[in-house]
Length: 427
Picture 1: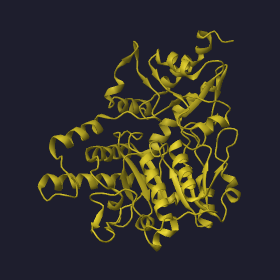
Picture 2: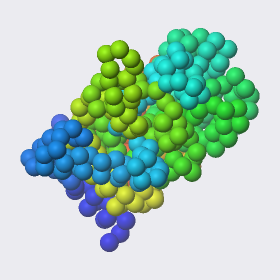
Picture 3: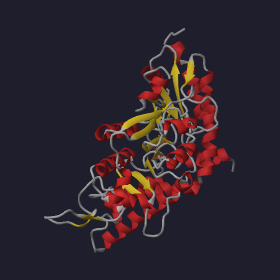
Picture 4: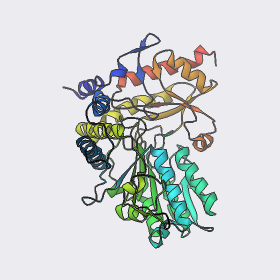
């Protein structure tokens, strides 16, 4: 069986793709926004509700025990996917409602530490006037805004890495952007608009030289690349299940175990407290429970574990190789007259997320023209306005691939885009 035949069999596991849109077979190229789900993931969520639905970590009956086992087995699967395995009983994965929730959890917890919460151990996260938080112009708003707000609340200064002409983070400026006053560096692993892979190593090295905490946005890397958080040596990382073939409403926060143990909680309620009193402060549980207040989306978390297993069974190196082939085809958009790619024009050190601008045609008009041919792409600023300003535009079109796409589908998009300017009579 050829590689393409093998991935065609993978495509057949996605029931939503077996339909027509506006009379055309669906070509789904919007996976950077949300990926489609294989049958095994859909079935896992449904099977949980049919067979073992119960609250986790809060019941002695059989269903509660089974659901708790499934819940924690999912945590272990997620950890294996990104090499986030600490010692047994010392998990490094926290479940959240999404990557946005993970990043806000961190920003809130850092803010709580700045108010003196968490005791002496938490002071490593505290920020005050004169301290610096570093991001980049390539950040999704879910990175930029929580840490921008944290800077405003604490009096810290927000700084950022600039980008080169292709929208890559200028990682070689780390020695000047990150200073002795820097306390937090929050950076994208892969740009959600440009598809560019950030050279993380010099940024992490410099940050740790000055004692800063590194927070990685891994939303666009975990579904597409073989990721090893221990090897990258980042302190925290956030990503979402729905972009890695899992359900919506689930996210993940990775943290080095010793940092999670020092981090004060950000949300409060049931299942995160060891002892609660009326007349003195509560004693909170060890992580990850400390950060998982309230009832979790258990069925979705169990299904997310199935998605992680599904990816690992394919093999992330094989995923990378297949998507690299799609990337090369998508980059042919840059050969179409009047089309500019907003990001690297070569396939090296990037994924198959390709944003583009069609001269003289509004992105929404481009998107509607493309949709009429059964091809789904993203239009807008992709929750990343600063990077669009870097390219001198307010919005763009974005095609983003996944394991279920084929080179032929990428070529269909290129052919469709080639007809845009003529359709709108733009010369």
